[in-house]
Length: 257
Image 1 (cartoon, rainbow, N blue to C red):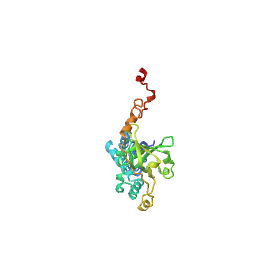
Image 2 (spheres, one colour; image 1 turned 120 degrees about the vertical axis):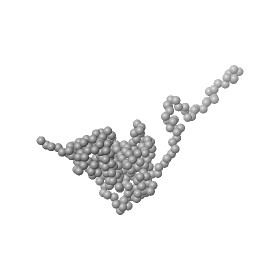
Image 3 (tube, one colour; image 1 turned 90 degrees about the horizontal axis):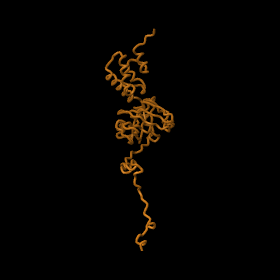
Image 4 (spheres, rainbow, N blue to C red; image 1 turned 180 degrees about the vertical axis):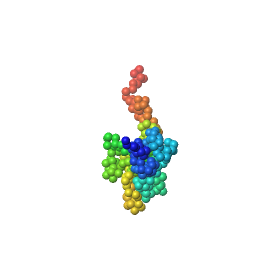
């Protein structure tokens, strides 16, 4: 009869290979390995915590896993490349990555000037495009990635789970508020740093070409035009009416004479 250890059970449940303990493993593994988002993640945390050598409360265990995942994601070589790249080319104010537009503060139908996103999930949609799950230090967001980005020889080969994308002038949309999505096309992509990229050095970053950044244009919304489009077209008054034809009008005074 084969005896299964606690760590082997944890590996079977999470689909992961546990070395010392779950938290240390999460710091070592790639960015795709973390708790399942949502309520399922709480169940997974409870199962892993129950078979661990040092069980804690489920909430405490989940918080520690989330912290370990955060530290792993934003200490990766790809994220460090993004930090040094932004600083060297002075892409945002003071060259500080914290001054980019954050996903956690994005609103529907807004244009994000500069966004830096870690790819957590990639799912082809069967039409050549790809659905992404993105993350930064403030939150997460789903995105639609156009097939021209995937086929681009400069960016396409580097796109995958754990890569970091620097985006410019990318637009959010929302079909069902409050859910917000990014619509990423080729002109939005400044650079992509692969998950397996080497550690960045000052010399390597200095030889990268300076990117072209499109300025953010904020035009005040035309409220009258927006409201006109929302109105029932059958109730709209034509913008221009046909001038009256005086030749067809009957002069009653002349008729009486």
